[in-house]
Length: 292
Image (cartoon, rainbow, N blue to C red; front, side):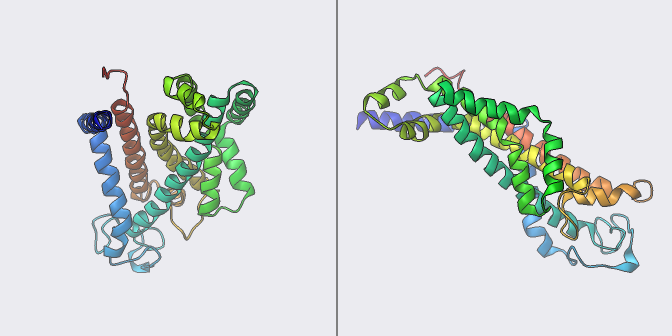
């Protein structure tokens, strides 16, 4: 019981220290606040607005922000930009989140198996990763998007297919550094199966870099969705996304610049916030300075 109590006290101290270091990070907390507010606005906001994203008010076409009933103005069809921005945020954030989940899942499995098994298994898996990385991801993404039906589900899968390799390399390097630790050797001596050691013993100790990679992957996925939707291969109207809002605004940059500025600012806030959170988590989970 004494050893268990000491372990629990140490675990609680470590978790408290991680939280404290994250909250003291000068960029992480503002990033967390910004992305939280943006997510809440996208979830709740459309229900609080007087117009939905498909309502057309022909008399208010090209209304600039802060005029009439349209807080952020209207687009060329007279649709409320605020309503479209928040509904687009739902789409873009969901695509980014689920693309992150898929890419982290695949990358973690590949990285754990390659790092723990080593030998020819590591060589085959990591050369596969190198093969995917040898193709410029944006061209691979556009090729897949052009060949498949551009629905949110397919766009999510396509982004995940082009994003898991970085996670695999991070996890593989971390697992290689852990596989010779005492707790792993003890598990082998006890006759534990390889799968148990990989996913029940090693993986929990490699969760820090995975969390950081996941946070940065969300930001990258949001950017990639915006990029391919801007080029017309991603989310298709009338379903709004920040990328296809930019696509529809490019011919009105001189006459109605707010059509591009508003979704551009939303993308910038989301991506920057996730990057700030990733930086904060990386510093908070860095145990090199822990002397315990």
